[in-house]
Image (tube, rainbow, N blue to C red; front, side):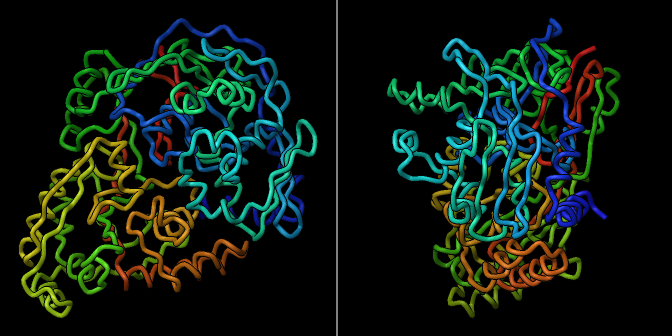
Length: 547
């Protein structure tokens, strides 16, 4: 049984009496600590790109999650460090009603918001902060949201904008969520970065000063590190939080993100000791890193998926025959060999094989240039057509070299008469434009966020997500009905059946071509202690120190 399946089984078993389960979990959580004396050490992370901002609710990529969600903030429930297990966070326990529609969270006492040069809290964390955080995403007329109008893609993609009926403060340390329909993975979902808890006192200060947008540049939370400064394309600086409520997990006095977009330069900095952790090495550099006496190379099979998306709202990609032709003319084997260089495996499904609910019986259409040409002719494009393909400007865990992949796809599609122009944008702009649906074909991907099939099928392909992370902009009712059916029951067998049927529809309709699942490598200095690869993609520094 996978961890994700086990988690679901435990939750399902405990559903009618979840308070007892939560109390047990809370009993394992640490008590709130007083101010700690932190080691006078600085940890430097050579990261791959500049975050678009620090307001976790409006982003969907690990660049922002690493730089804000897991440094500055906490959530009601959290994933255990390096694990897919959930554990108490700012809520020390919770109850779920018999019908699965009400979640009551009992909040942790004594948690302090961070003191910075731009905010000095006058009170500790309480229910007002939780209510504000969710009301801002839920209510279009909420004053702070009106003052700083931004999208909340994950909150919308997961259906929460429609499904949360209300969020109530029952007393200063108790909050109740009421849902309209059962949402089986709800607890796992609110452990995700978008649900990071903001300070209502700080946001009120910003609102009164007419500076609501500063929430995206000057973050304040309850997390292990305190934001100090950000210079785009250069550095992000944090101090360790001596008042962090989890004692002993902050192991350094300072944390610096040295933004270094070139993986070869990242590796050189790591070897010279200019940073102690780096993101995403080039596959070709893996053998060399393994021979470096001063470096270690943790790795694990990635819970990820690299995809080639088709914007199904644009001609001729709205035609399923065209999408099938493009799909079957992609030489995946050659891409795996050249782009992933032994650190990836061919993907056939819209989620990785380690995800419960994966349909192992699904097969790719055979690579067949002649059949692809025939499909294009049947679709009315006997001479092919022109197409713009977007390639990511940064290295991602699911795609180590998007430019090379784009060039290989360009050559593949030329064989069937499709003339490809390759385009790209700065990473934040790339994601913004992709959410808006400006692309035709796009290289993108996903790393799982909460270990549930809904995270792949619903978020990447559901109708609720067409303005967010459904980069294919594909809303197909027979598929979407199955996703909603799977989300709306706690019966694991029924959920699995619905998700397998949905995967069959996906293979018939081809809204995107799954390319690969990659192995994740995280080079670090051997002086680093306590580091764990996050299965969901971000790089975290809780419990991480230096010898």
